[in-house]
Length: 169
Image (cartoon, rainbow, N blue to C red; front, side, top):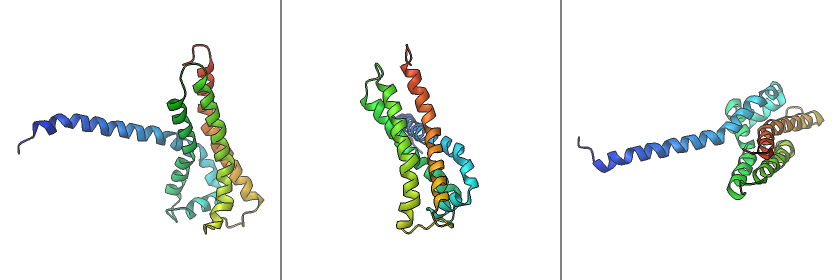
């Protein structure tokens, strides 16, 4: 077997690129995974377990739960990426961007996501609540959404406060 010198020389670049993509994927998945761990007490509720079991892949709790936790982190990730990409790091720009991300992400996750779960999914044919979508279900959905929003906002607010201090980051 004869090795081509060009392919041997290119191998480190391919490995570096693959490692960079893996780090990027891990960086984007980490907030959702941490939030999923902090969100697990809500799995004590049979109603929420029924929601996650009804979501694809149907009949499987863990993949649906992790998938939803990762999906709910998307507004926060988009906000952070847009802040870093579009806002000048000098001055209070990033601090304000992170606070805005915590606020708008919190509204989306704390109130819009429960509305989608409680009103949107049943209209799409995903009937998941065995108790009939009463006030208890809505309270549980909002509590779970607000808890997720708080867990996701804490590091953003801490980072924003730290960056706003004299000396910044």
